[in-house]
Image (cartoon, rainbow, N blue to C red; front, top):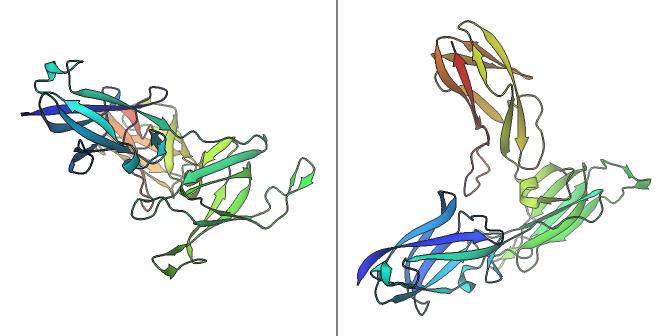
Length: 319
């Protein structure tokens, strides 16, 4: 027996790589834990590298899990996704000549509203131990914006929902409407937390047929677009740059969104930035090339795996 590098590739039903999948390795019986790793994007494919003993061959059970992805029809439940792999040493003895394996996961597709005036919000919840969270109460309080749709009055103060046994919930909301949302506790470990408010949010429903409920409740800055998209300027010149700041709940924030993002210059000896409410003013200081960088100010919402802001840097050339 010898240690061999084993690669597990994971993609969805449309051959799109799935990163952040936890792959756990057990013995062939599935009872003795061996090792684990997460898939990351390498050369356009999502792969997890593992080191396992090979033989003629040695069999292992692998279990996969990621929220919102089903393996063998089981939504994100690693205990119900066993697959058998055979690791050879040397790898050339394997039927395909390698110790590489491919797994296909069924990604969750957001359900869409059938009424063009509505947006269907849906999502899964888990507890602090990673288990599906049933019985979580969520209340949407109508702020009466809009008040009239297609000649009908939008009445009713609130909508009460509860997650099902899989921790899943879905509902239709008016596009463009504003709601105050209360997420309430559940009865757990013999202590009744029912009715205790865990958190509350004010949300604005996007003009879309579907949206992730988690993005509505926990929006973060997602993308920046620039006008112009790059600049070349002389030393001593001032140039105005207008950013457009987009969030994961599909809102466009007002102006330069100074309460949500921080603008800095990578090399302050080349250029400086003065953020105003409606624009950024760039000053050329010395010849060279540098970047205007954007970071999120609010770090209270932690998303795993973390993602950078799309187009979070902007090239400045000073001549």
